[in-house]
Image (cartoon, rainbow, N blue to C red; front, side, top):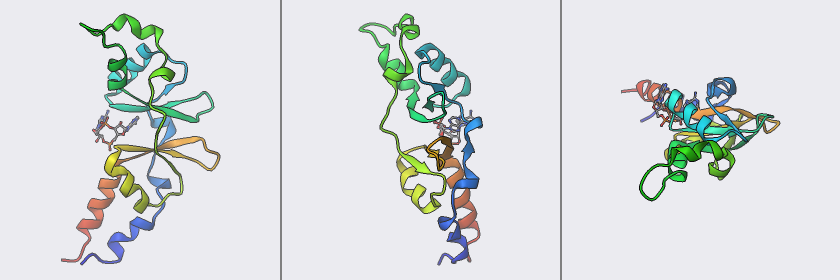
Length: 147
Ligand code: 2BA
């Protein structure tokens, strides 16, 4: 049986566990797809947030979305990258959570999403909650279960 203590974290706020906005690789609305491809390649992340100049979340962009957009009939048309804006390519239907959301809520969402974008009380982008952070919390809970 899991002790009450080991699952206490489920009612804890994610606030102190997010990767804060300044540490999150992102692109801005208006950036071209060539710049976005560079950021995705250099950071190694498969998907990153798209923000406006006021740091509000506008969407998510992945490597797949870029390659799909420049896929020609016979080859990948890299020369089209500089003429495309991230605004045209990004996914806008993105799950967003508030900064005071409890861990039990992110549990469900992180089954289908590798990370969740987090907004503060003013609806500004505050950072991301990743699957890795949740897994570490879960591991700690499992290891403190009574035998
Ligand atoms: P992915 O890029 O698909 O990465 C999957 C997992 O691979 C990550 O899980 C992490 O454990 C590892 N990983 C990938 N690139 C890494 C790197 N440059 N440095 C260290 N570890 C790396 P999570 O940490 O749970 O992240 C889940 C997703 O959240 C990532 O998926 C990425 O889309 C996003 N992400 C994580 N940290 C980010 C950051 N600082 N900036 C932007 N996006 C981030």
